[in-house]
Length: 128
Image: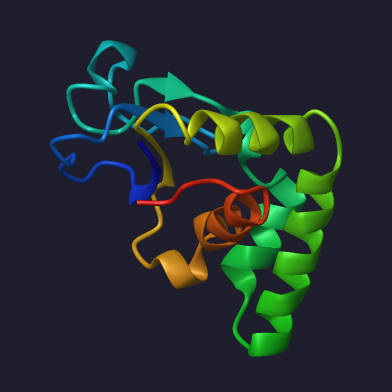
């Protein structure tokens, strides 16, 4: 049992379980009924996505200092309830079920999901 950190829209692992989209917006041009069959997500959970302002910080980051500012802002948002409770819940569930969380970004190191991975690990999540 574990949580995977994935890129939404990519092929699923055989034992991946439920895929949770931690994104601000649904995929463009994809009918809602096809989100799961096109490997985006089974459940949309924007509560763990960066706010619009923080997302713009991450997208505009060009230097390590810019990226550090994004990380600081996103971590601050995730420390607030209910996001902090959601992360704790997912960490606990990872001990008993397979599921995944993800975002559309091509490179995890330049995506909020890299920080989400750290936050889950800090809460004791079992990571795949």
